[in-house]
Amino acid sequence: MSRVHGKDTKPEITVRKYLYSNGVRYRLHANLPGKPDISVRKKKLVVFVNGCFWHAHNCKRFSWPQAHSDFWKKKIEGNVARDNKNYELLEQAGWKVLVIWECELKKDKEKALKKLYSHFI
Image 1 (cartoon, rainbow, N blue to C red):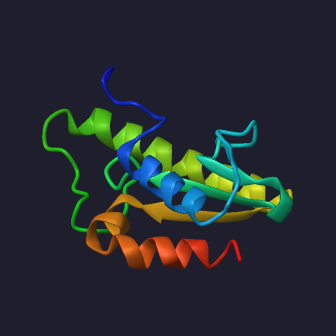
Image 2 (cartoon, one colour):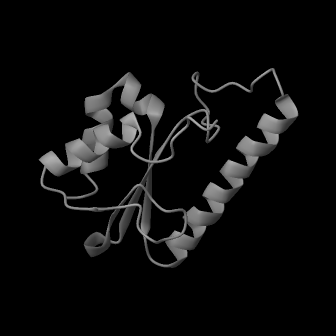
């Protein structure tokens, strides 16, 4: 797991490049609950770019590992619980929380990015 990086992942960079090329200026990994991947203070908007495996997305890209299943179940369920807590804290503070999933970018990148961008205009 030491080779798994939490920042500057390929899906995150894809989203950042798209937003920047369309004139959206943002901050990276702001000091907010959950350290959102992208934040725009002016619009009180945060974006999390989540990997389907690490955040137990209900899609075909996620399945529970067979090896060391107790460890992985505890770890992934902990990630989901932490995500939900952070989303709630951000919403209570007046932030709008958007989540874009890795599978959305793989399935139809243009559609997913346009949908995300619509929240910025």
